[in-house]
Each structure stands twice: as C-alpha cells, then as structure tokens.
Length: 233
Image (cartoon, rainbow, N blue to C red; front, side, top):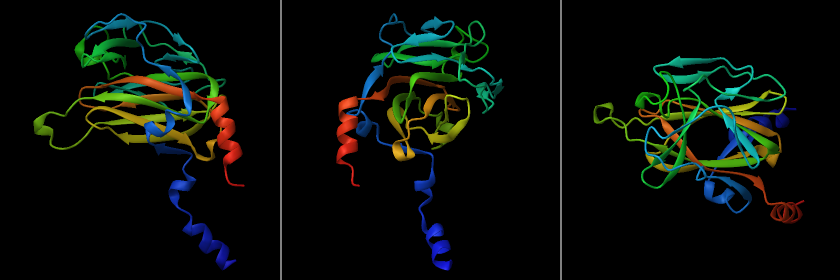
C-alpha cells in the first residue's frame, strides 16, 4: 500500500492535466482544417463588424455559449464558466459580437467586441470569442496578436484564458495563458488524445486586446490512423 501511495504522489502533475500546451508547429502536420478569415474584406481597424453566429467549414464562431452570463471587468468581457448543453453558440448584443480587421498589414484577424461596441477602438479585441466545432476534437491551435504593454507598465504581459467544453456543455478544463508580444502561435492537446473538445471560449486581459488567426483543427484521418498503428502497445 505504501508503495502504491508513493507512486501516486510521484506522477507528474502535467500528466494529469486534461489539456496540455504543445507547440503549434507540432499540430500543423496533423490538423487539416484552417480558418484564416481571408474571405472577409480587408479593412483596417475598426474593421468589418460581424453580427450573429459566423459559420465556417467545420466550425462556427460567436461571442459565447448559451447559458453563459457575460460581464465586464476593467473593459474586458468575462464569461461564467458553465454552459448549457447541448453546446450552442449565442451572438453578442448589436455591435458587441465580433469584427475582422486587417492587422499588422499581414492578414485578416478576428477580434471580440466588448462595450461600448463597434466602432470604438477600446472595444476591439477585448470581447469574448467562442468557437463550436462540428466534430469533437483532440487538438487545436491558433495564432494570437497581442500588443506591447505601455512602457510604464514594466515587463508584465497580457493574459488570455481558454476554456474547453464537451458537447453536453460540461467543462473539460480552463487554462490561463501568458501571451507573447506581437504575433505568436499556441497549440492545445487533449491528454490521451481523447476526442471530446466540442468548443472553446477565449477571453483576455491584454492591454490593447487580442486578435486571433489561423485556427487549426480536424485531424487528417490517414495520418491519424498511421499514428495510432505506430504507437507503442
């Protein structure tokens, strides 16, 4: 019995985490669906306002999930963690849902809109973004554009929180992520590669808000089969 207890305490905490952070570059070869928002017009900030649920191949995007209550903290959207099952999207109030802007003169990127809403600059990038997948996922990734903090703020970086949900609305995990400055990529993997991620909700506290791009998901079925057949055991 003592040996069993000792072994339990020796298990790495990371192995018990429902969701693991992994390099985006490691997921790219395995995930075949990408949403890059380039079908929208290329308009500089405040960009193109998007009302209602936005549908893409394999996923839909809006402000939050049905059953979540939205509040504001220091100008940023905050969501209650529990969602109603089955998981469904709910758009934000008029002018407070989503927008797409041509950012860094690189690409179209998606922003959540917080009060006071479009076209106010302080609204862009500070709102919640929620994504509902057509099929349950085991991994996903996306890029985030985050701005440098004001000089007087020191070296502190902004944060985002990604919450993962099953199809019945139950929460798998919630993960705070320290943001890199500029444009960086983030990958997330379900522990054991279990396929039960039906949706995610993203909020943030970056000084100037965030924009997301290049959402990747959906495993290549052939590569997935090879991966399973070549796995030990």
